[in-house]
Image (cartoon, rainbow, N blue to C red; front, side, top):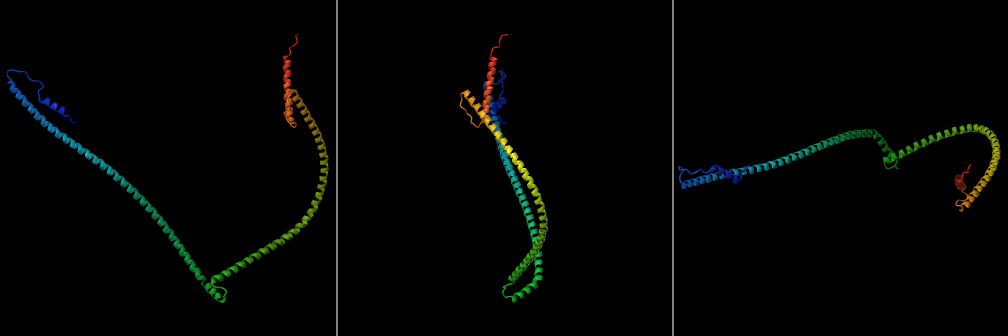
Length: 307
């Protein structure tokens, strides 16, 4: 750590100047001589101080230059670290891109290889199909010559495809006619069998109809008897219903009369419809309950006779 100039000079002066002036004695030289000696000592001290100051300044300058060099080296080292870190990052990015490109190239190569394999397989299939068609063409060559000769004898056809189309149409028509004939023959056989079954079933049905007719006659007689019994029971039910209807009407009239009496006793107009018998009975019931409660309270309030 650097020492301030004032402290440094003070320490140097304390080392050079004696701390205590010695006492006068007879052995010492005169005061003027002592003053010159002291001045000489002060000059020596100043020279020493100047020399030490110059040395200190040189040391300070060297330390400052050394510190600046160290700071410059530190900055350069930091910059080198930054450049080296950036270089490493660039190298890592290039390596990643190179690996990615290599992976993509390998994937593309695999795809191209698979496509090439598919094309080779397709080429082999096409070659086999070509060979098969070539063999078929060789087999059909005599037929083509025959068709050419037939076409020369049939001027109504322009070319071989038209002749072949006409032949295919006739062949399809013949096959359709044969199929239709077989279907009609099968339908005819089925109709004959169905007719025979119907004849056999007709006899059985006629016999069954006779039996069912006798059963229906018996059921008709039984139904007539049940009808007579039902009519008599219905007449009885109607009579009973008429009686119950009469009783119901009387009951409703009685309930209406009671409801009107209750309304007259309360001096209130009837608030219910004439057909609301249940509501009328409910109001009569409430009135009777209120009247019973009132009578009970009156009996409790009457004084008991003295014994």
